Image 1 (spheres, rainbow, N blue to C red):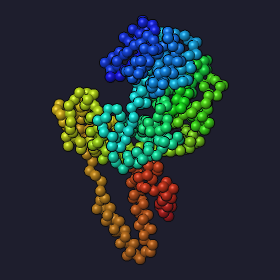
Image 2 (tube, rainbow, N blue to C red):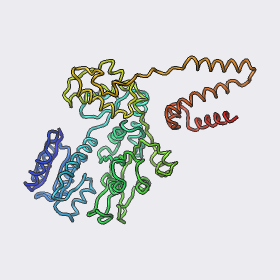
Image 3 (tube, one colour):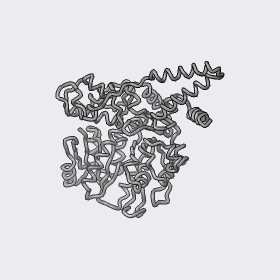
Image 4 (tube, rainbow, N blue to C red):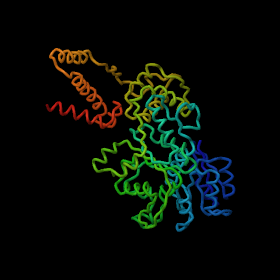
Length: 472
């Protein structure tokens, strides 16, 4: 159950907001004075606060600062009946989540409260890795003991204390935001604000304003000044997910922030100083975007100061049993389903399925299976149809024909009196091995070099040698 606190001296406003926002998953408390509101913040530790800026016993800014002293991570939505007030804007500069004008649009407010609760969870609930008990409800766990995930944990541990930019690469649904939160919670900025922005989810025309703010009249519909996320996150960490979807103009401003920690609001001339750590993520190949002229090369080099690549779930099948167990423990309480085990044939399907949607898809499948479970064991008939009908592929092994062909090549070269046969055999091996790996990664040389354990320079040199050999 999440908690919302409403602080407003108008009884009708408190009643209206409480009645509209209370739900089965949201408990609402109210206070008519700043003093009472601060007591409730201390005692109840709400997930989000809605606060009027004009209270009878304390100014809006003083009340906001007191809340920040109690809990610097608590999202506060400021509401005001005075369109021209500077207090709400100043509160935003100091880190308020958002401000709205009265009368409040309740649909907009519900959406803001939902997003503020998600932010509160991200700021307060640590994203941990390693051997933390999965039953601990006060953490979000990054699950996996495979060698690939151990490398990820080591990378998080190395970069978290360093105040540098981090680029997280990986497919959708793999848990990039969890890694960003783990870096934040283990950093020296962990007591500062944290904001996560999905660049792909915000229209191009609005993203620059969302990040950097705008002045009144900067564009049609800009009826008042808006403080952007970089200004709000001063002293903290901002996570820009799907940064590959960002437009060129916004890329230029992000580059300036990284270089100089300065920017201007849209339509403004005042330079704003901002001390922010940037963590970025994308599921796209930024090098390809740079080559195509769709992403700035100078920004790419600024972002890749420290890169963490998350492996897709299909490349770490050994982690699937632990992920299934972790998801079971999370969702059986939520869905009130006493399921404690997975049948071996169901687990086999889960382990061999390729998981194009990665961990997010696996979690959805476990939820689906729990809803359809008829006993305390998950069986194959609980799984979605696409998994039930999944044909388990036979594990690939070198065929006898390939062995014979390689052996025959060696014998032919020896019998023909050829010299230097070792380089020729190695070239044939390169043709087979490189070809198979490149087909597996759809031609992505970065991924191919990682799987092969060689540098991209070496890979390219081998490919050039094969190409020249074929031409002759």
